[in-house]
Image 1 (cartoon, helix red, strand yellow):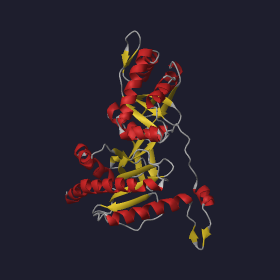
Image 2 (spheres, rainbow, N blue to C red):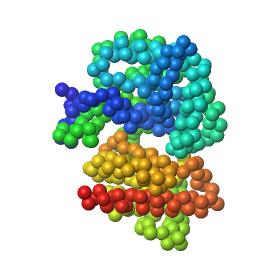
Image 3 (cartoon, rainbow, N blue to C red):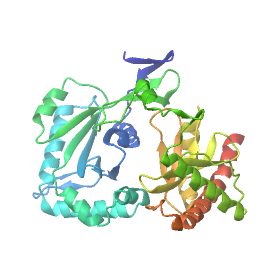
Image 4 (tube, rainbow, N blue to C red):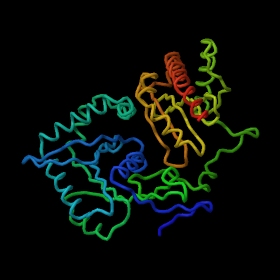
Length: 363
């Protein structure tokens, strides 16, 4: 029996009940596999020139690398060779169909431009001609990525029989003993190089202290200045938000009646983004997140925008996020516009979630 041990707690290898359950877990963590600047696109029926139809489990567009992936999700308990080789052969025939390319391009374009969160992934890279960009990506040859929940003796045979460039990602899930999938650890190989540093590397990179205090970077100073001026703006507007002393961080938060729930404004100078989110932390965060998600449609209606509902891959914390379109944050003449956006959505988030947080606490 495969097991992981963390701080004396045992995690056992999870067996997924069905492909749908496994597929959902993969999609929750697709950015950890493919990288941050990627877009998950839902399944679409594709067909060859001769009319042979097939439906991949999803598509992923890598904005950074200007390439795309066709996703297939399988359980090791299924007959892998017969299923995967047959399915991938159908994909291979379908992507040679020029008429199919045009349909996929339009479907991807409609999906991305119709979703603010997906749309911003292109805009932060300065892509204005979205249809042209998507066309160029889809006209290139995709890579097939097959996810499977554990190793299998058939995998080598499967890999050797695939018709073109493919990768197999073994994505294992280990669940905490007597808790289950709510507290889990995932083991897989990421398809991107991570900028990971050891504690020794991080220590070596720390700046020397200035007059006994850490010297602030240019970005830290910029963030602090933005939040300080936002606080001045909010004070003038008599907002009901509880204003805290701004710090040199990329976030500025407001409690919603519980220290584990915070409405948080975020600033990303490099990506030119401003965001507003509900950040949930603590042992019960994932349960509380699911509780709130049951009211997803009514919450999004109150806020007036679609939100990104995200469980963080490490630990229990969860985020419910809204981003602006690209914001030229360094142009101070536009700060009042950004301050209005911050006030509007911080108050909307506070109103929408505070009453629901109280309800969760009462249950």
